[in-house]
Figure 1 (cartoon, rainbow, N blue to C red):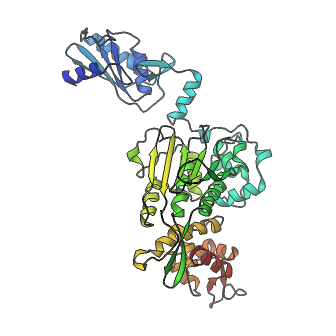
Figure 2 (figure 1 turned 30 degrees about the horizontal axis):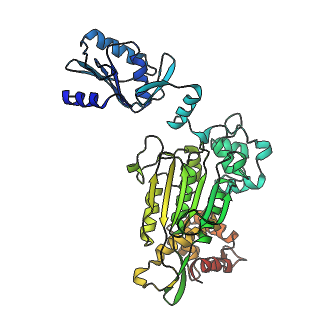
Figure 3 (figure 1 turned 90 degrees about the vertical axis):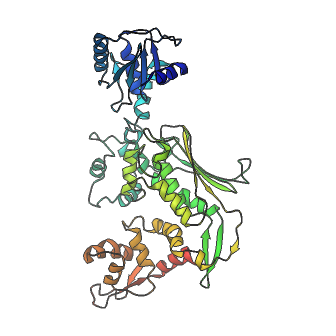
Length: 482
């Protein structure tokens, strides 16, 4: 710190990160506490409120008293003290053990003042700073005896890969969705709800189709408010039903190609649901205009995350819900959702989406094509494998979501044009354990009637092969060729 630095700070006046004090006072702990609970700051001793330099003596006794006050903050605050000319500067770096209190009271910095937090404000502080998470808080409205529907439980059990023999209470407790007293968390209620608005009035998704580029005239509107998993599925399918489709002539066949990559839209809706602020009175909105698709979720960036972190790291606002979505294969733990959305759009040969961050909202905007209809695309400009990844596999997600299968393995099998042995399919799918492949991949696909055995009466026959059923062919046909 130099004289020029101090002069510049004084010229800017008191604010969120600067406090002036004429002289030493024992109330310095309040200011330290406030800065520690905020983003840090500096206290200048020897400067009046008006910015006049009055000076202060630099003595070991004052330094010792200041350090003692810093240690009396709970938990103790680390500070730095230095003197520049006749001014003593106390720097309070950003702290990591929030919240801090002084003499049993909690303070934060608001403008040029340090304000004491009320009880309600302290509760809000805990949530805002990520010390407490709303998804892990107890949901008083959900009663396991009254609200745990067996059909909902059956769907959730399959999605969350819960063994069939395990009792609901045991499974939910193991997943931290209920506590030892069998009290239900908010995340648990959202995952098991028949109507999520019974337990959180603004947790639903509202979808709207508008005429033109503004909200002047609405053409269609739908609210989706079942459990979180189903709600996500219904929302992206609504978008799919409203956007245009291009007809691509490729290798003497006509292929349907949606104007926007459905997997990117689905990813954006999942991110909106998983990372939104559930304490907000606003809900998720999906707006479809003639020139764009907007997916807007309540809540800006989580605490300790900045815009440059997008696509390179994960700081989930709802870690319990996030972990369950990962268990259900909806999200990745590496925080790659934003980057994956951009990559898919780039590979799909459309404009990359726009990510808009406000204090209370996060919006993803996809840009629609201006001209649609029947078009011909040269095979050199059309990557069919990318098309399959971004469009067909989305349908596979919906069809086999209950089967606990790896999407890539399902894709490999469904794209087989000829009968193949179990070993050939296992090799193509990159698996090495034949018994596990048979149990976890082939048998579920057979039960789902997407694949059938060529010798069904003798499952262990040396001549046994597998082929697509009519249902499997129809699924692939519906997704790829019309």
